[in-house]
Amino acid sequence: MTVHYHEEDLPDGVLEGTGALAVDTETMGLITHRDRLCVVQISDGSGDEHLVRFGPGSEYEAPNLTRILADESRVKLYHYARFDLAAIHYYLGVMAAPVFCTKIASKLVRTYTDRHGLKNLTDELLGESMSKQQQSSDWGGPDLNEAQREYAASDVRFLHRLRDELTVRLEREGRMPIAQACFDFLPTRAVLDIAGWAESDIFSHS
Ligand code: MN
Image 1: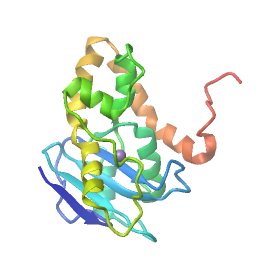
Image 2: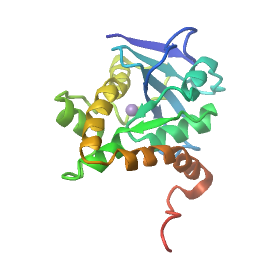
Image 3: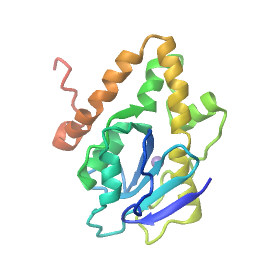
């Protein structure tokens, strides 16, 4: 279990292979075109996490990272994919799909609660506790401190296990087809966000 830290791209030969990849991002804020992408975290579920940090003035040229993110043969696991897909598409120029989103899966099966945060899921479904203490921190500084690295890595640490547990429940409730349809729509949802339809629901009557 190691957290690997990289600047501006993944090294050659890292995370090559097959199988799902857990992905998360840290940014300067919630407005994608204003708040730059600072960190992309990835794990292949083997127990290690890789952090790729983009510094101030980055040109976001990361051929190894973007090739892996754009690989259509590997499912990408996110918690709230909508945000991460938009940030990755806007800054790195690739659509990091196909997608499994643990927040959407949770909303479709954990209908007995309105608590769908990542910490809620890891607590309830895995019995693991994770800290959210560094969630609102300055990801744009010259380096990431130990607490930030650990926090960033922990956001992708449990996504494979959560995917497995949520898949069991989606199948049990007969909701895997609707979940898959939602996952498949997420790239379009992210593009709509960037294009200016973030706040409006184009499916609503008014
Ligand atoms: Mn995160």
